Image (cartoon, rainbow, N blue to C red):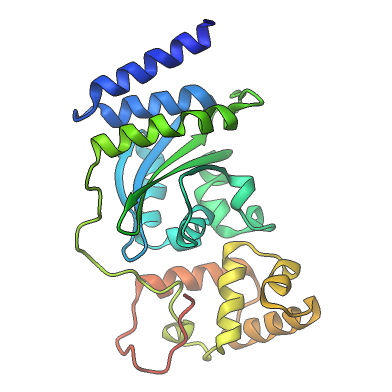
Length: 270
């Protein structure tokens, strides 16, 4: 048995021994990170009906301050991994490139939650936990010198049954507690004093914020790219903006200041 296999068995043994203890998440993280040679882990509960809930993080103070609060409050709605979960994902290992829209790396979301904090790549492990929830282990690469083995994803796939069994043993009932209900995806910009958007325009805004290009939006909605371009021009005109940066700012403002009257005929970007 080579050194890497021996080390992996040691990580597994340490995690097994720690089940039920406070240091279990840390040791589980070390097991996962040993395969991918990444350097950060964030473990959370995703729910179909409630916002994500943090279980563990080894992020430093600055990264936590700048990302965790905003992410758990509203930004998860634009997270490609959360979007994948909402499609009723099975237990699996997913890379960022596999689930992100084609223009994702040009978005303000990517700038805020990846490039600005030095997050270069991400791999996520989904573990179904019943009742519409999943335990989600997000592995991040912040070390520019990190080099993963070509078959790292396959290795993590092979470990999935072990990781799943450990998570189920340590978190047998991980359902999120009853707390604030799930917000709509970027509630209407009417609350920002803008003109009301049509249902189709709201759908296009949602896809734009998530990082879909004009061609991708056209494909998803069954329109031509030219039609989508016309919609985008109308959206910008109605909202009196000229960039996606301004659109993202309006999204944040809409989440920060919920509407006083939900029955005002507003269009939600859900």
